[in-house]
Length: 252
Image 1 (tube, rainbow, N blue to C red):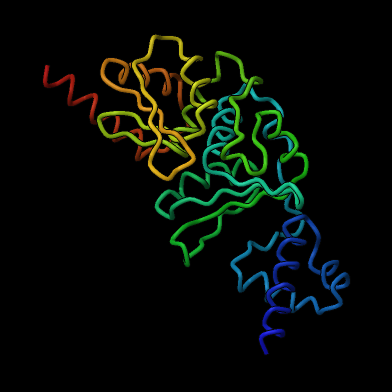
Image 2: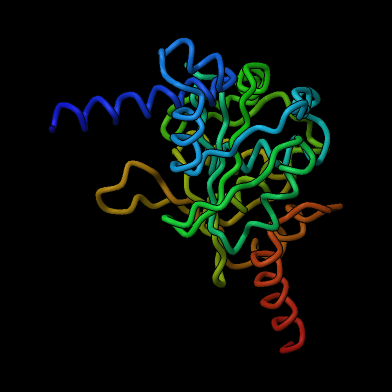
């Protein structure tokens, strides 16, 4: 019985990986010598988004790194995304409360965002070898947590969009800015800021990542830098910062 369960687990994993690599259900069924209904049931029960017929993904979405949309979402993926190179897909999974935000990218790129009730989250899976390859030009690769490097393909007019996207994915604000990442990436982020920034690094206990902490007089400068000409941002984080700075102004 345990052998049978293990076989089913491996089969389900193969079905999901093949489907997310871009193969159709009938092709998978033939390849694995199972019925198309079995393939569909496996995808449905594992909350895998079923591709619509004739749906088209905008594979060129990240080709030009020097637009607000491409720079911002590349930053968001760098912080909170997952790249699986063998099957050529990119995935973002975030809290269900931020679903409306993720739907902005889904609508632009031509994919639906699906709910993942088990984790109280939602996810967007983009199956495209071209997009996976293009994201490598932003230094976003599989297993990026410790290897991520700051992108060199985004110019100075648009790099703040990338930083804002990264902050929305892996940063927080509570009277100070905390941004998580590997130290080399965070040092590059600091060095590219167009002002002298007051900051420090610390390494949480038993954690491989570092935290960049921006504080005191640099807070307002960093806020204004990130949101310059911004039309895309995670609203709940923006409103929290805005309320803080408005309160500071009114108290003076």
